[in-house]
Amino acid sequence: MATVMQKIKDIEDEMARTQKNKATAHHLGLLKAKLAKLRRELLEPSSKGGGGAGEGFDVTKSGDARVGLVGFPSVGKSTLLNKLTGTFSEVASYEFTTLTCIPGVITYRGAKIQLLDLPGIIEGAKDGKGRGRQVISTARTCNCILIVLDAIKPITHKRLIEKELEGFGISRYNWGHPRGGTVPGVAFPFPGLQGIYFCHPALQLPQGKLNKEPPNLTFRKKDKGGINFTSTVANTHLDLDTVKAICSEYRIHNADITLRCDATADDLIDVIEGSRKYIPCIYAINKIDQITLEELEILDKLPHYCPVSAHLEWNLDGLLEKIWEYLNLTRIYTKPKGMNPDYEDPVILSSRKRTVEDFCTRIHKDMLKQFKYALVWGSSAKHKPQRVGKEHELEDEDVVQIIKKV
Ligand SMILES: Nc1nc2c(ncn2[C@@H]2O[C@H](COP(=O)(O)OP(=O)(O)OP(=O)(O)O)[C@@H](O)[C@H]2O)c(=O)[nH]1
Ligand SMILES: [K+]
Ligand SMILES: [Mg+2]
Image 1 (tube, helix red, strand yellow):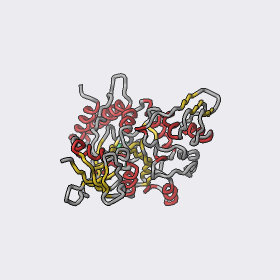
Image 2 (cartoon, protein in one colour):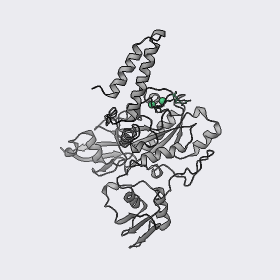
Image 3 (tube, helix red, strand yellow):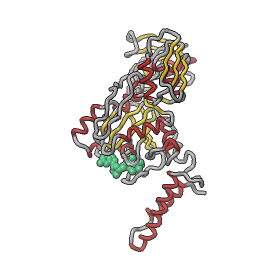
Image 4 (spheres, helix red, strand yellow):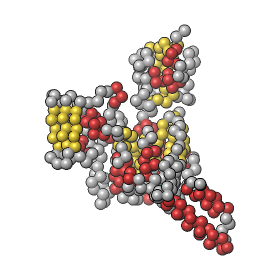
């Protein structure tokens, strides 16, 4: 049986083949209606199983990092993909133009970044409305999420989208981004849009989680009684106010928290978050060609925001730069013995896995067996060059020469 996607494609093909004239008007009208019905079926999977689990979403990960475009319908996600990557994803003024995941590639500063255009999400996406589930689970696989907002729509959209993502265990860590600042308690100053605020500075990106023991603290949610905070050891990082602030970020108002170690805010967050994934995100405010200069000036001051006009290609460079910053990638230039470093084709490492060992494994799976030591030039090196072992942490734009055992 043909899948819904195939049926849609067939009808679109048939419409393209059909000449537009008086005689065909009725038939074309019928096809349009069929198309609309199929689109709806795809968005609201019925008991007949329209849509299917991951139909149209099984895009293979490629390149050095993956960035997803998430947002309400018709905010301009596809226009952005097209302009940033030169790919073709259908653009139209009606909602739910995009029905599947459409990948494109950006080559930026020697890195290949996969950009995913996704269908628009609607409120209730996390509960399985529309294709929301697929969209959000695809977003979970990204290294950075671009939340695309329409500058002329109320900014409350931002909270709604975040609610959907959080309902799926994705939370923003941009408040803890090493280079990202936080403006605590900044209300979004658009008329009628009070109550929008950014995360409390106590919420920091969990660093070095991988090699850490789980913190010895208990966290128990309750129905009433407020926040109770006790500690069996002297603690230097957390006090009641911080604990309360963190809990309120998660809309938790009643809980018992007991520390048996000198836990940090990160530790508490980890425990509250459980299986949450931390993904940096950028708010791309699109269609700024439709707002006033005064409104634009406000947007310019907000953290994690990037105003653009996809259609008129305004500030796409600024957006790329921001994506680059939030991906926090590490470029390593290889220097073959007796030759100049290859500045054209860096090895791209993530900020969390950037030791000489990570570098070696990326070049060749057997490289480590032959590894004797490495010579490093650049900001991670104390001398020019520094002789290092495989546990040495590299920095962006370091030059590395691997010396093999003979
Ligand atoms: N004025 C203005 N219009 C834009 C801009 N970017 C996109 N549009 C228009 O907004 C409409 C929707 O654009 P799409 O790119 O299809 O939006 P989308 O978010 O992919 O929509 P769905 O796939 O339906 O969720 C189209 O009519 C675009 O031409 C922009 O920067 N400025
Ligand atoms: K659209
Ligand atoms: Mg689209």
